[in-house]
Length: 447
Image (cartoon, rainbow, N blue to C red; front, side, top):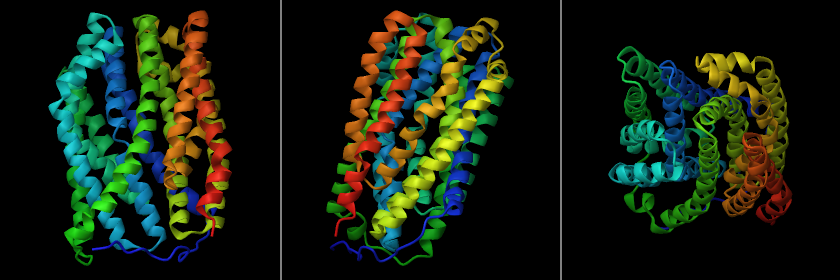
């Protein structure tokens, strides 16, 4: 059965500040729960007063993130393709996109569980940290990867709701996921004294609970819709397009996670104390970053919808409004980190040496939000429009700039040089996408 191709430009719409905020604010709140979870996990382990445990958790979390970032295309791809189908008023294709992504997510998750011992071994070899850090890292990875199938399915559930602009429901599911994770991590890690293992098991249980809740909501909605043939849902041309697009977005996802992994690894080479301090500061930055991703997500949905509708005025409005709000938020986040950074550090860890080391590099974390704002917002625009080829190329360019700066400044300035390289990576990533935006938009909306 051939895919239906709706008429382009059939659903013009106007983008307003209210519409941007209606999408971005629930997404910011949902995204905020993720780094807050990291803060809680670090705080739980930090209560044991052992810098090696904090460093091991940080290293393991980075490796876990790089593995799962490989599959971030499931969330991004689902959001973009559902948003474009929504813009074309093609409800049938919206549902088909979800089920295609569901099959890929389930198979990929089971593969990650199967290869978890190998993933742990490779990660430990790459980090090359001390034995106490490696032991904590190994335990965390092996337990947490059990949640892989549920975690990847949660990606596409969230992607579907975001693609339809239903960020409130996405918020509720994320609150359930991370709220359960926080509660279980505290209960298992602190109350029962399981430490790092308790934090990991808390993630496993919460991912499963959130997946069951999300699928229950979706299946209830799908039952009320007209039936859809399996031939249409699993159309090989459509699946092939999804996999092709996924390949393009997988590369930047892996590169981005690789940057965080290199950052953590270089911190580990500077000593366990520096590794723990950088982990604390990165958690603080990620709070601001996840706020920024709220506007990046709004740009993703609105840009994708505009491309699906073939309506350039809405696309231009989406780019301008999301950029304005994102820059304003980045400035506010930077000011808050400068004003209350030391209090935040003290709330995360009680180890005096880690607090003192983190305070030394606090200004770098405070300026990370303004330097990364354009990267988050432009990535949202390009992913929503499915211009993933350009996202891939600009990410590779940014990674080359990061590695060059890392070797140039890291040798001379130590951890200051490491943070400087991270800022250069963010700036190059955002500015490079901005420079090719006009060309991409001209091609996409050409008659």
